[in-house]
Amino acid sequence: MYGWTGKLLRVNLTENTTNTENIPKEVLEDYIGGRGLGTKIIYDEIKSKVDPLSPENKLVFAVGPLTKTKVPTSGRMSLSTKSPLTGTIFDSNAGGFWGAVLKGAGYDVVVIEGQSETPVRLVIDEENSKIKDASKLWGKGIKFIDKNLNEEEEGSYQNLMIGPAGENQVKFASISVNGKRSLGRGGVGAVMGAKKLKAISVSGNKKVEIADKEQFDFVNYELKKWIKANPLTSEAMPKFGTSMLVNLVNEAGALPTRNFTETQFEMAENISGEMLTDKILQKNSGCYNCPIRCERRTKTKNEEGHGPEYETVGLMGSNLGVGDIEAVAEFNYLCNDLGLDTITTGGTLSCFMEMAEKGIVEYDISFGEADKIKNLIEKIALREGIGEELARGPREFAHSYDAGEFAMEVKGLVLPAYDPRGLKGRGLGYITSNRGACHLRGNMLGPELLGVPKMIDRFQPKGKSGLLINQQNFVAIIDSLVLCQFLTFAVGEEFIARVLSAVTGVEKTQQDLLDMGERIWNIERIFNLNAGFRREDDRLPQRFLKETGSGPASNQVFEQEVMLDEYYRSRGWNNQGVPTEEKLKDLGLEGIDIDV
Image (cartoon, rainbow, N blue to C red; front, side, top):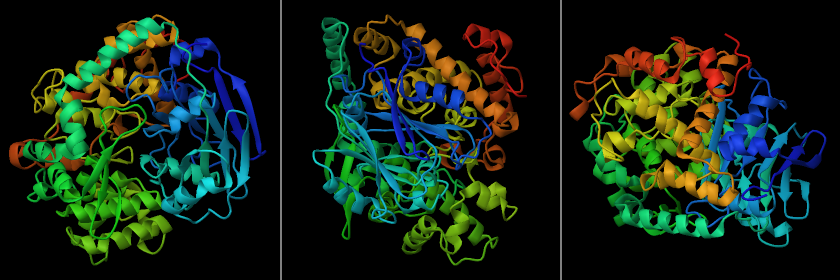
């Protein structure tokens, strides 16, 4: 088989067994890999209303047909599950080298099911797989595990790990990829912790078979030229990393500040990509076969580590009122070691701070008090004191005090670092995303702020649905391949279709990709509908609908209902957001059950 290995490793932690299965070729051709294949498996194998932290939930790690090839950014991997934070179907993907090595071990997919009675870790290589005791690692942080995990094994392994937050089933615990990257958001680390699975180590170097090597080399050569020609991927990202966006978004009036009460931060320059580069950057590096090299290795006066990325700077910097890049970096280091998603941690703390300042909760903390934040981060990961309440995420925490309006979330997922009053297409993406408020589900930042592929009016509420839907469908394919979304700043659907066809020998057009992406999106939507989600869940907090922003967004609110009506019509759904029979037939999904 070209591109794919066609193999799935099924690991049952309850029965302490591992088995290899064949994946039907037609399933691979229809769902590709990564997010698409994970969505298919989750939809087919678990009930939509399952408790996410029960043994019945599953973790589906998947790569794609381009993984471990010479295609730029082709080392990523995807994880699908049901989220304990949102209750939705959920996927997360991460870079590094783990995905390429899993493909080298001979697998497209690893499915983890059941639940171990004691802490274990999984070791996978080209010859076999083993479930091993991990009692000595339980309770340890990511830095310790990353340093010591390989000592028991011969050879070189890439590792996925959870920290104390995952063990304690914090609802926004993450999974670390070799201590450098994270499968973040949604509490995927809590699912792994509930299964008492501390780590997954992988080793393998099998080659990927290419169907048309001559065509592949030509298209890949063109891909690299476009990456080099684009100023974002060739200059800005390598030099300043993702934090290059801080000053730009702040000037646009879209930088979340003090729990989204403002859209501009007076100390943005102090936490910008430029300040990070000048003050704490040691070097930049990249993931497997990536020429963009946006990863930041940094060092403060006290510590060193990786990051922070733009989202962390926004949510744990300006949104907490902290204008010190060293402080933000150290928050990031601590979250990484404990295994916490930085976006949700920042959003939870900003919600807590505003409630504390307004006297809704009794706690001595205000925006900007960086010295108190580290202590709170540790309390959350260990579920100690107030951390026990905060570990549930901002939605549950705020609602427990009858103060849900202070939680800046959609479907339980914290808004990323772009205020929807300043970027309205971005806001429409937040409310329609199948996993909750997400900046990676249709990149409207490109057309609304960066002029990629063209500039549009970011304050205009109407006429954006078609562009967003096209982006959402395309991103579903990028996540299924699994490639880095930064690649899409330089190339579009046509190049991706050509390289996929060359690798697999299965001819795919640009429209074929978008159709497959639409199918994946609709299956995710149906899973959520069957889990009980409805139109009223596709909404932003009232703050964005009634309170104006600041700076360029000073007279802007988010026009939610008119945008949502237009989006549903453009999707071919009814006015409650349910796919019509005609739409299901068009996608080859006729007969699929929708519980509404």
